[in-house]
Length: 372
Image 1 (cartoon, one colour):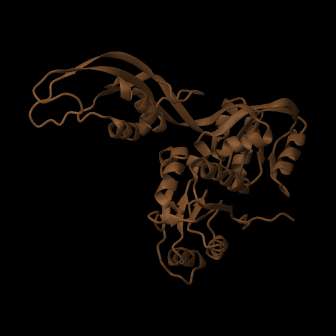
Image 2: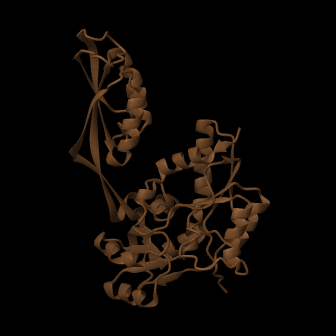
């Protein structure tokens, strides 16, 4: 049985929500519709004409891309232009395209964390803060016999997640009182007569970003016609998110040796180095996939010995040298790591939810640069 496109994207956005993207970043659905069944999903870094041809050949229903295919406005729908024809081909073959860009850089267990895993960078924190999410608490009253079901439903909606603990909650048992009046259709009791019920007060916390989902789940599961519940903000818990990562290598090593490691790990023919002394010892490492040169002063503030990022501009390289920061520019294309890692993650979801769908990596090399 094929998988509904909206069901898949709902799960994907629970992992990689659009609200985490940087302001103005065109993430989300770019082309086509999700209101269809999915049999095959292609994961790619870039959406290029060669990738679209691959998707058509492999009869793909949806492309998940790291880089948005429409990053700049399309002013003309001239299909003599290969880039524009690509959009027409996608529509013609009913292939949807969904992009996750900076939100994939920011999320926990996202691209920058995968870089750190490969390079052995530990005890990481973000390089530059982008979001602070507040928390709220829900207190809901249900008959004691419905309490276990309600706790389960709230946990499935994402409430009660605290650090490394899931399904956290607190319950109190007390007496609920109510009198159904004309027009009521009570689950318990009769119209015109006061009723008392042994109820559990269940308290759970959740990030404010999922409030709608949590309340909807609670109301759907609640046995009462008129559920009693309270929602209020709490000030002692927040969660911060940020671009890039900063952490430590297990052992300090010369910059030159670390450069060799990066070339080997990412299978690079070459890379660029901004450094006065390639023999200096490094241990604290900052990294930001893509074009992260503008965050190099954050790497300095976080006391990084070396900063790894792509697309360093010539004059910014001078600024980095002046500030005494060593920088390794392995290029933008190392972000292709998203392909195997996302397919691995999607296949785990496929197993967890018993989905009948195929996830595949694009085999097209979309790196525009070659080294000689």
